[in-house]
Length: 357
Image (tube, one colour):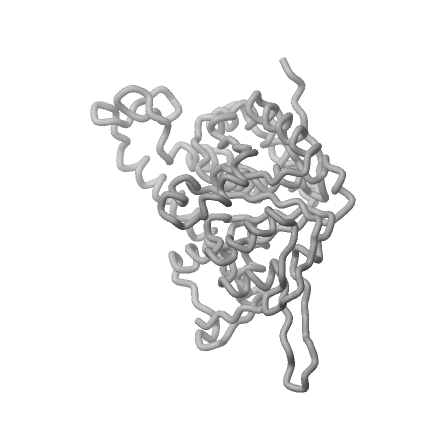
């Protein structure tokens, strides 16, 4: 029996290794931290790919320098190229205006390129040349710049398929995939869930200064039976809701209202009953309660998103960070809940990119 490990690797950032899968991941990350090779980290949304990347950084000789995350999906091709490589151009009076990119700004540090398969082709080509030569030229410039930076890429999609579809350069993929780490989904490390429940609850109670409700055996069992498609991010949001509402019955019902892993011909509801073709069908009262729980959950989510957008003056990227979700997920939720800015004709600016809505 291995002792569960919770390792702090940054402010409010922890790596949990309490299962064979995550202990193996921790070992692989430590080995890669001792080298300077590019690394590809794959895994579903919310599994902790960025945390794994920061673990590698924190264990490496680069740990005293910057760790920076850049989303390849959040910027246009030109904006992403300028963000990474910088730019220079002549002004009207003949002066040269220049701005260093992330590769220069984070010299000797580590850069994590998230949503890697969303990187436009021209930017991929420049990244490939940087990996091959350790040099690049600023956007609009002519002078080669040599840089010392560790590059880690993260992706949740199928990169082999992206290569086959010509969305990712084959040579760039081979450069990165030579050292690939896969972060397992939460459903494949269910033994960690009791530890993670306590870990998230301890963090949230310290943050909000409120007493922690008790996790009963029934609630823990329901958590371990649930599939957690949103992985660690979804689990943390669940703990936050339980901390606020403290309603164990509603929390268990919320978990049991979702599909279960397949067992035989039907799906288990977590209590030994089958909901398949030959299984027991819940009555109207139970269905109504489930609908009520789902409705309440949706309304709470809509309210939280609307509040975050209002707090950030509809800066979508800032709101996504505040909510702890990806930028693309926020855009999807805005469309799903039909949220619109107070003045839908405004022009919103974020990270130098103009977003007209």
